[in-house]
Image (tube, rainbow, N blue to C red; front, side):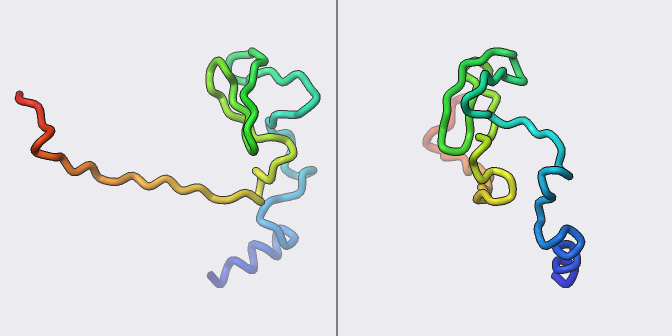
Length: 91
């Protein structure tokens, strides 16, 4: 972990670069017509942090959410499936 302070110093004290350096990123912008980058339609299901296209399920972060650099990290754990002998089908 000795290199972590060097990374923070190189980026000005933040792991996420400023918006001017990040460039354009696709977000759901409130008060605008948002077309889906996946299918081109404009019907959305709006959540607390994400907007999901009602047709193709493409998800975009909300413009005002803390989705870039400030959100919680969600980890998915894949567990090995242990077969249950009582539920096996006859071959």
